[in-house]
Length: 357
Image (cartoon, rainbow, N blue to C red; front, side, top):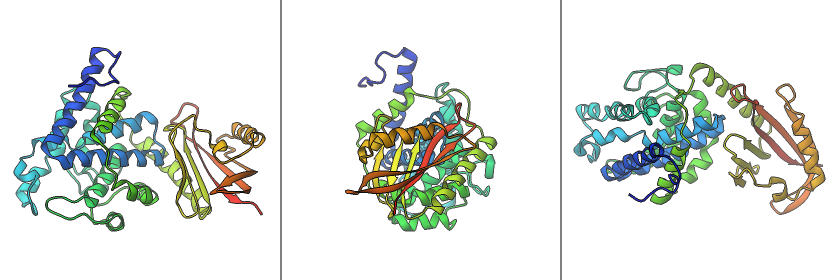
């Protein structure tokens, strides 16, 4: 096996961990090429959902890598069932349903990978309790498993398999929203709608094997502590932040929108038609320089942001900027986001930019 460049300089334990992840994903690929590609896409989509709802970086990483592994239990499903052309019989479907428990069992045997077993075990649970294997419902289902679950269904719908044709993006989204694929957390349904444009672009995107394995290795090198994702309090805070963002953008729809996540470093700017003007994942990226804002205005904005707090979240300024090749005066309104789950509380910024008359 070629040595992972992320393993260079690490101890034997970390190197074995990286190799284990590689071996598992390689086994998936050999068993069923679709499953490996599916898990890869689910992992990328889960990352988008996690960033949107404002999860902590370490939890985003945990969900992201667990999503890569969520279907590993299919290694234990007979090929005749896994690759069957046509609908499974009731008996065959019951066997297929065991893959989540098989996967969780595989991970639970490893001290390094056992923290992912809950996500793998419960990624087919549904919010109304009609999923499997344990029939968990609502907040009983870890938020991590809920995230993987909803993007898992979306990718399954939009992918062609030996037994079905792919649904188009709009049809797949509507099927999920209508409850045709089971019930999901209403907050995650709102996320799915908000991410619709990005997901439609992602379903045609193919990542090469090298970048895929390197991404898994990078994430595993930053693997999380033993503490599981908290459930009730954590979910309640996620709901609150998500609602705050939705309320802000709803009242300012049709404008150039700005969203920055301090945890992931993701910056996204959309125009009024929801087309991407700028998207970066680089903490050193100079946004103001990109849009031609002068240094005096930049210093003024930064000073105002430093004065924000949980009690005083918003700032509003007039600036001159170049947007879509048009330089003019704009009103910039920024709304800071805060969470008690982060040490300093500050988790991001949302805002809008509109022409000033």
